[in-house]
Structures are given as structure tokens and as C-alpha cells.
Image 1: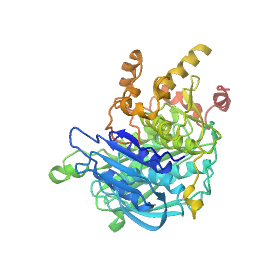
Image 2: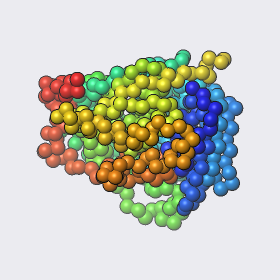
Image 3: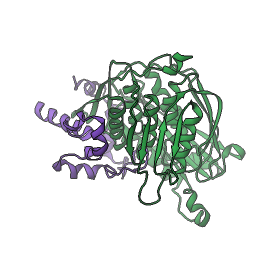
Image 4: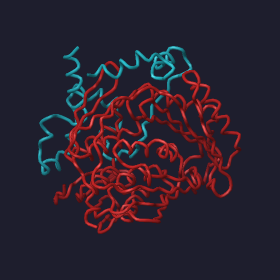
Length: 376
Length: 103
């Protein structure tokens, strides 16, 4: 796989994917013009991601210029390792870091176990609950054993101050993933979910639950949403509440939606932390329920959030045909497909299916092997 | 129907991967034209940009979550009926057809 040519890219977009793909294919990359106008340079969360990459790999080489607009990254060998720790900062949720981490963890020398600190639930990134309930289960379709794959939520942290802590364990795979033929989305047979609240009245969760269940019960009686109230140290440092819901289908597809309500980000905290009107628990419940129904209406074997990851996994499979079905392609998924073509030389055959308004994608995997493991 | 189907599939490929001619370029020329590659033919461009606001923004934020601009009101009867068959409580026959239409 290794090409010794350095790839030149520009702009900060799809930073995570580029870093992951560069690492998996051992392609050095140079990224220029990172936010050349406006506030220049890498953001804190991006630098944090680079630190994380450095932590889990060996012999990697990262160089950033003074203003942070140029980055040179020479990937090393992914080591994995036990009892690692990383502070994710407060700009983005832990979800931002989990996505690249599970991909890289699979191709490590030894199983990865890492403690991540920061914001567990926020509006921009998939919540840790979604991750635990959906993302990890996606991997089993690709032949990753479920044992050793775990996300434990030790404490929660809502924005702006975070204070959450999760423990992620990812096993490393023997050599390759297995290709999938995953086109039957089935019918929704039950809905599960979990609400959380930190530093607010536990009663709020019942209000979220009640509103969400009201919408779901029009469709299906089997709705069970757990509550997870955290107080004291395990409740982090900020007040917030939220909910993640998952629709499980007869064919084992998981379709998720989540949302969180809390005070806004760090910058606005100092001046007007109490000012902005927060969404009521009832509205939140209804919103999340609508989001989930919207995803179900889209069709596809995964929800829109997981499209990118699904394509990545397909492309990393051995040279075998993978076939998947998704709903409408999201901009993020489209970018993912382009990045996959650029790094892995894998092109998907994309076919719309007008009858069900879905899209089927077929590809031949690039056959990325776990080289790190072989060496040891 | 077959013809519209193949056309739509071609345009979707084009939307994602750009024009067929550019994809064969080697790395050197990609350096210069990495942005041009993302542009799509004139007619489609406008439409595509409406759909995807951050299409050509090289510094777009890195979100995997997709935000629907507005949520429909799912308590209304029509919408409820529209996805009724996606649930096990709906019509199984119709739902089983759905998966096979593609073959």
C-alpha cells in the first residue's frame, strides 16, 4: 500500500479522515492553507487529535508551522496499548475522537484501551451513547469480534465545562476485515434509548421520555428508554440533559439519533452563560423522536451519521465485493468517498434505487492489512 | 425507466467523483487542480450547491452528524402513514417487496 510520495492537501476540511487514511496507508501528508483567512491555523481539537495519534503510534512525525496553517504528518506504526489517557479538550465532544480511534485501533499492534476525558454529549458530535449502542455494533458486520470492544461511560460531562470520562477498548484484528453484503434494512422492530441528565433534576428525564414515547407509540409499542441520572462527581461540571434513541430492525440494523441540551460553548460562557433560552425537555424529546423517524424514513442500513464510517470500513475490506445500502448521501459521506478514492484508490459504484429512494453502493476493498501486528 | 435510472446513476457518480476525465490524472497535476476537480458541470452546479452549502469550502467544519434544516411534523397523519410499513406493525408484504425491487 505504501506510496513514498507525500500527498499535498489544502484546507482543514475532513481533517480526521485524512489523518486516518494517511495513517492506515502509511502515506505522509502535507496540508497547507489551513484556514488561511479568518482566524488562521489548526484549532485546539485538531491539535488534540494529532497528539492522540502520536500517543497511539510509534515513529510518527508531526510538524506544524508557527501559525498552524501548515502541517506535515508522517505516519508511524499504530501500537495501541493499555491504560492510555487523553484529554479531549472542550471544543468538541468525545465523539469527534472516537470515530478515528476505532478505525485506527483495529489496525494496531496490540489491543487499545484508552481513557478519554472531555464532553460526552453535545450537539455537534455523536453522543457516547450512540457510540456504545450503534457504532460499535456496526463493526461486527465486518468480522470484528464483539468481545474486547467496549465503551464504558464512567462519568458524563455536558458542554461547556465537560468533566466526562469514558473508557474505550478496541481489539486489534488479525489481518483484514471481512467484506459485507448488507443491503436489507428490514423493518423496525423495537426502539431503545437512553436519556441522561447531569446536575439537573432527574425529573427532566421523565419529561423527555414521555414526549418521545408519545411519537413512537404511534408506530410501535416496543419502546424502552432508559434513564441515566448522574449527580456529584460522575455528573461532570456542567448542567445538561439529552437523549439518544436507536431503532433496531428485524435484520439487525441500528438507526440512531441523539440530541443534547446544555449551555453553549466555552467562548460565550464568561459573559452570558445563563442568558440563552434552553429547549424544554418536552421539545427535546419530540425533536429527537422526529429525527429518528426521519432517519427511518430515509431507509438504508445505517443512519446518516454513520454513512462515512460505513464507507470507510467497506473500502478497507479485502479485495472482495462489498455492497451496502444507505439513504440519501450526506455531504460528509460524499467527501468520505472522495477521500477514499484519493488515498485508497477505491471507487464505489453508486446506484440510486428510485423505488425506495435509497442508494446502493458497491466497491472492491483495498485489502488493507494489519501490518503492525505482523511485525511483532 | 431503465434509461432514467442509468442517467441518474451516472449523475450521482459524477456528483461524488467529478468528471470522468479528471479522475485518471496523476498526482502531480492533482496538486494544481485539486479544487477544480470538485466542481461539477455547469448545469448541475447550481442545484448541487443549494443542496450542499459547504461543497467547495476547503475549511469546512468536520462534522459527521448531518443536520436536517427543518424537521417535519411527525404527528401528522400523512407522514405517519408514509413510513408505517417500515415498522413491524405495518404491512409485511409491501415491506418485503421493497428490498427486492433492486434486483
